[in-house]
Length: 153
Image (cartoon, rainbow, N blue to C red; front, side):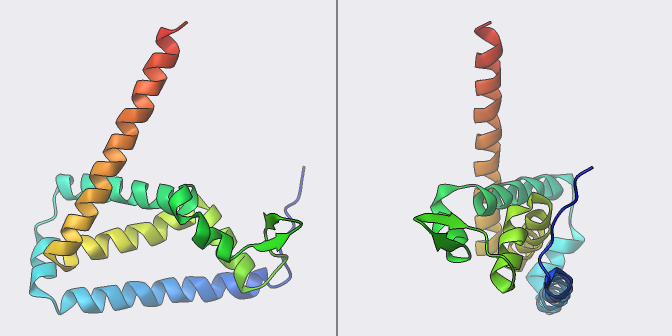
């Protein structure tokens, strides 16, 4: 059985990020609660809204963890050594790298962002809808690749 080596300050940064996430949830709720448009959106939630938010969150996860367009952001938190980017040994930057490498962690943050955008204003709804349509396009693209792979055999 292998053991995972965590940085020395792992037990410091993770609680800090959890606390920050909880504070973001509270702030998002506070901003939403005072917005009549947002509250009407929340009270009228249905399965369609959950589907849109799920797809938008899927797209945000992919965008943050894998897509080349935000590679500059991911590289900002990496150390450059011998022309290659490597994960820092410890510290704030290491915690950020571990956060954006984890699709489950990114999903939690992405869901909060998607939900807040979705209910905050018509513009936020539009942005979330664009993310959801993009995710649906990615799903269809991957399905077509899968069908093509099996049809060639």
